[in-house]
Picture 1 (cartoon, rainbow, N blue to C red):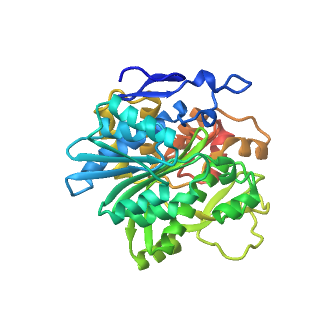
Picture 2 (picture 1 turned 180 degrees about the vertical axis):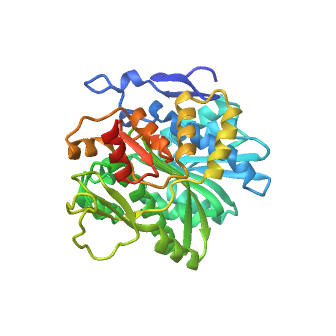
Picture 3 (picture 1 turned 90 degrees about the vertical axis):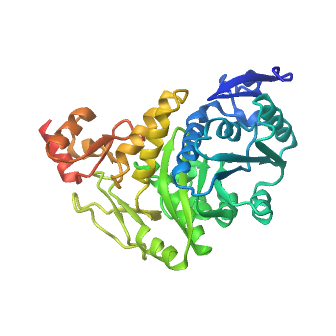
Length: 401
């Protein structure tokens, strides 16, 4: 079991040993590995995504009352995520992992990889369509505590089934790699696919994560369910959200009333706001420069994270020295910004408006800190900051540096 078949190579990720397609055989003309060309999908650039999934399941030990956590990865490909969860997430409770795929080649590979890690008795593999798999689990009496939806492209084909089959208070993790659509590059597709009206603006990654959360929340409400985001972010080429799901028609309505709204953004000076108004479009002037505001709606406007849960992730991280340093930095960042529900301020917008050079972010953050505001560098943009200061305070610091 130690050797991979021809055209496959052995890799180590986390505590898992895996046979994956040889990346040297699936390179584009620019010599970059293209995982979608391989017979079974494996993207090494998603390791942080999988690290955080493992951390999340470990952290669930403190919020799940039963003695066993049931995990489902219905789009498992090589099986890397489920195998890592089985190896690394077991804490005070037993973990039962189910994996599947529509590809027979993927099924054979994940079974091989499960044996390679001595997990044949702990990991269950089924050849099945992802939506069918989720409903099959419930029909067969399983209570799903964690479902991970990580498709190639948009996740919308799988969201309804996940919301309908997750247990009360369970967690659904969803990845979307159609980031260009969520950011508004393709306006018609953004509307058709996610029911969001808008265009690409200079804070497009903020729009992307809130557009995905809106779609999940709106879909949940159709089934008298509501969601609580515990972590939502954009990183590299994808958006990723973790939501806890609960039942209740009145709470679902409350969620829609309080957490669905509009981003108003000024393309002249960079002013932005989150607003509950999602009614008919109207001309609204920027309170800073008088320019007409651009609106993108409907979007999720409430918090993107749960500080208590993120603190649990940080605690689990200490116990896992094999986790990537980049993942560690991300978790620290998410914990830092979890209590700042704002839109990123782009310094390039303010610099253009004031006809000034862009100052160093560290200097601007120091100025805002001295004024008593919390400010953090954005991971989305090299010139972005997240702060509870309003844009006039930022402009004041801009002028004083």
